[in-house]
Image (cartoon, rainbow, N blue to C red; front, top):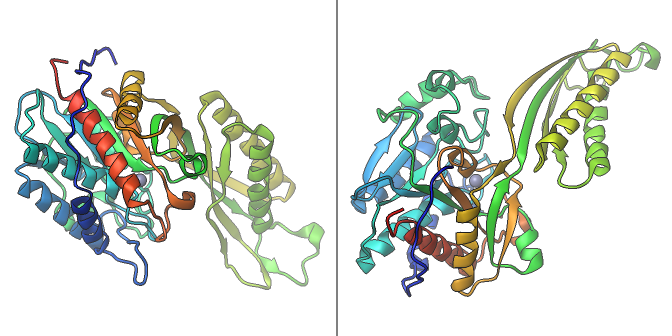
Length: 420
Ligand SMILES: [Zn+2]
C-alpha cells in the first residue's frame, strides 16, 4: 500500500446509540419486506432497491453529509473536512430472500457513527465517509461486488453498464430508470482507509463464543456457468447405452464438486447452487442442462487446482456421455489479504473495548476486498446466529450489533486522528 497510517492510541468513552441503529435497520428492512419474516427482498436496481437507496441518501443528507452518486450508482456521504476521508460502508441490495443485517449493518452503522461523532462534538483530522456500493450480492447481475469493483477501476464503466441481468435488463438502463446513474467520476476518489462492518454469515464466532472478528482477508472466488447439450428423447424407449443425457452430466458434476472439496480439504469449499434442465419433464431425457459452480479457497494455487480438476472431470464426463459443453466465467476473484496494520488496529480496538476477538478470513466476498486494491483496508465481523445468512431468519443479537458498531467507531476515530 506504500502508506503509513498514524493514529493515537486512545479509546475514549464515546459509544454508539444501539436504539437509533436498530430503528434505522428496521426502517430499511421494511422496504421490500418479506411478509411474516424479519427479512427483505431488494434485488439490485429494482424499485425496492431504489426506495432503500432514497431512504439512506435522505439520512445522509439529514446528517449534513455531502452525497455523491457515481456512474455505477455507488452513493457516498462525506462529512465536511479536509483530506481523503476514512471510509466505511457496504451494500444495501439483498438476495431475493435476504435478511436485514447483511450489508445494511455496515452502511447504517456508518450513519450511526457519524451521528455519534457529531453529537459528541469530536473534532477529527480528516473526515469520515459512508458508502453503499451497487449490486454487491450479484443476485441479479454478475459479477457480484460490481459497484466496488468499478469504483476502484477494476472494470471499465462502459463494460459494467452493458451487463445483462437474469431478467434481461441491463445495469445501465436500470440505473437510469431508478435515477441512480450519477455524475461522480469513475474510478472514485481513494479513501485514506476503508473499514467494513459486516455480519460473519458463518458459524465460527458463535461456535467459539467470540464477539468480534478482525477479518484478515477474503477467500478467492470462482463462479462458472456450465451448459451441457445432449439429445432430448423418450425416457422409456431410449436404451441407457444410447443416451446423451445432460441431466446426468450435471448431477455427476454436482456430486464431484462435493468429493473434490472433501479430498482437497483445508479451506476449499464448492457448491453447485443452480441446475436448470430443459425441458424439465418427468418422462423426457433433457436436451440441455445449465448449472453453476462456485469454488472458493483462501489460497490461489489451490483454487486454481480445484478449477482444473473440476474442468477435467466435466470434459471427461460430457465426452463419455456424448454431450457437448460450453462454460462461461461469471466471476473470478483472487484471494485478498487485508492491511495487517488495520487488521491489528481492529483487533486491538476490540480488546480495549473489552470484547473477545479473533483474526479470521472471510468465507464470503465483500466490497472491502475491492477497496483493498487502493487503500489500507480491513473488516469487522459480528456473530451470525446459527451461521445463517441470505435467509430472512438471519439474526444478530443487539449486543453484538452494538459491539461491532463500537469497534468500527473507535477504529475509524483512530484512523481519522493524527497526521497520517
Ligand atoms: Zn453482504
